[in-house]
Length: 125
Image 1 (cartoon, rainbow, N blue to C red):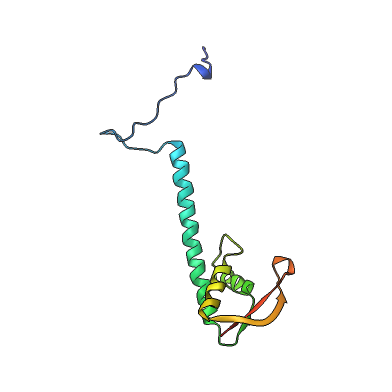
Image 2 (cartoon, rainbow, N blue to C red):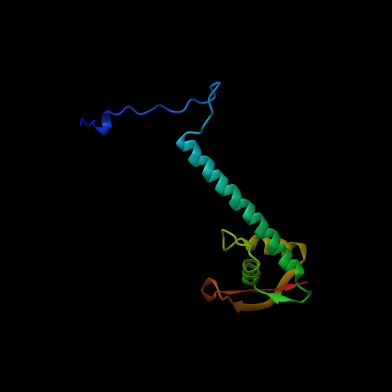
């Protein structure tokens, strides 16, 4: 039985691309880039769905309801919506404040997350 060293085995070239009669396949690096972009797109869609859920939670609060931002994040998670960033609610809170939907209640309270950091208690206006 003769053995051929692996280094001597001829490797096939890349699959022809954009050649009539052949299927076009991405190269390995293109496939990785496409996969990463697809994952980013999926995560962006998930984040958009999370943002919509967070907005609906805040808008669903009765006038005068007081809450910490983390409570919105936790409620969204209980409803099956998750985000990549723990700070994703910040822009939503700032926008609602600017639009007059919520306002600071004047109270501060420690969070259950964020190592018990003291945070603003918001009030639905």
